[in-house]
Image (tube, rainbow, N blue to C red):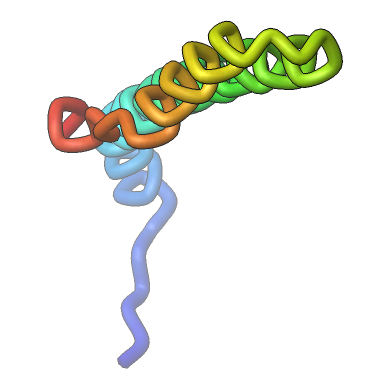
Length: 86
């Protein structure tokens, strides 16, 4: 199917749809940035807890290691709030 559209019609469509599609793209990018921030925070939490596990493993403080492993389990099994973003 071949549709011929003159320049005035193309300009009109561009003016009508351009800002709207740009707005939708900005909204999508903002959601992606928030998801990236959430994942970066979670990664940071996991790294912190792993560091707490490795340092006590060298010191052999069993109580500290058990507490750190418990925190790691909580962080790793934390539910993803993806449903809240939609």
